[in-house]
Length: 362
Image (cartoon, rainbow, N blue to C red; front, side, top):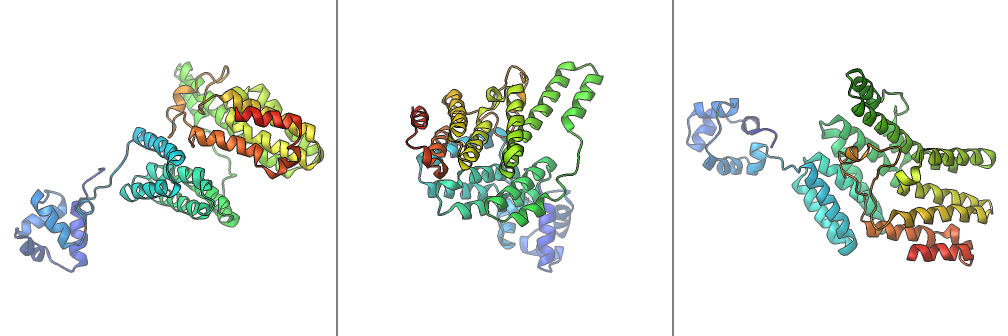
């Protein structure tokens, strides 16, 4: 509970009913002076009076005192992990109902609402009949966080994911409206932080901040490359692909964040299928399969030889090192992306492709 709001609530509800302090005092059997002290915050009603006051104003005791249930960061992380697991072991509708109950109970816990929204957009495809409705619910959660959260960073993240929700809902105009102005240059906080640490001689902290800034920039670049690849043909496509692979090799991104790169390799393979270059497509499907099999049984963020100071920073993220979906669902989607993709149907009898499917199955 951030603060007790009973003073404001009693004043508000009393005035809504057009009652004087004396009217309310007479109803409750207390003095007018007592009501005045309650409304100015000098004192609080006796505990036994709270249910009577709440009932009179047609509200719960929690609403009367301004109680808003909250979850700690580690509790949100544990809950997210549990719900991810539930999506693999329980009926979809039951898990959604559980999530709805949680949201109703913690409707003012904005970090939790944000993560429930993330959970929804990462699992809405499990029931194609409800995908649209679930994504719309996620969008409404992000909108609530954006409008009501006092955490500026959280509100900005919520606005970005609200835009993503609009994309998933096939409403690009609404997404563009939310993202207006995102092209404006802005200072990188981590770089300024690194400069400040360097000035006071804390070089290790300066190193950490610099690595975080560089990592975030690289991940943004890896998110942008697929769009660049999809928008271009011929020499421009080849140039973009070359640049992407150079960045991956230079920073050893396959070691750092293999899961992020897998979608890039899939997209490149699809592009090569379109231009009837099956062998090149298979080269990238082999790279995709190699990454999938190298990750092991668990999907999580990791450090690398170059980015050797990220582990502590990962733990500050909302979900820590964990992936946004259960490992079982991730492994299933990795295989389905190869086996069930219509664009790869022409490869079904290709021996290289058959071996790749076999490796993923194992």
